[in-house]
Amino acid sequence: MPNEVLPTQLIKNLLSNNWNTQGGLAPTPTFRDVGEPGQAIRVDMRPGDQIIIRMDITGTAEEPIGNWTYGNRYVDIELKFYTMTSRQRLHNLMQEARRVCHSNMHAAGINPFHRLRYKNFAELTQEQANIWEGRMTVRLESFGILLEV
Image 1 (cartoon, rainbow, N blue to C red):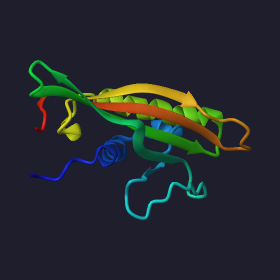
Image 2: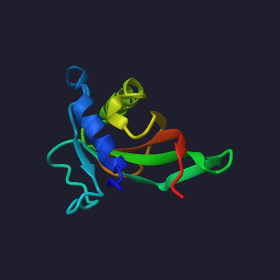
Image 3: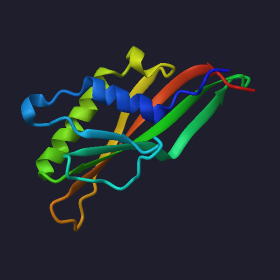
Image 4: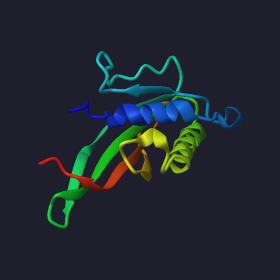
């Protein structure tokens, strides 16, 4: 049996390979998959903007269809955005990540999944001084796949 595809690594590669700085409005951030060995969840803002990629709390879900031999699989991924520049920069980073998701909805780079879907974004900035934070959720979807039995 081949190794399972790591969804967080797939999203990290997709973002880093397709990021467009939008003329400097959304400079390429540092992408961190917190599932990688040695990658702490602590964020060092000195190098610049950061996007932390990890499995969402809902993780992976399956819906059997028909006789339960086949089903649909959904994997939710959380992207946490951090910037010290401005609230506008936070939204520019979110807009570029959303663009990458929409333009790669059915791309070969998301195999073995069939579709990548942008779900939502929430600004999380509360009482932090000069740190703007946001949370985006994206979903990888596979339809009518053979379920392991």
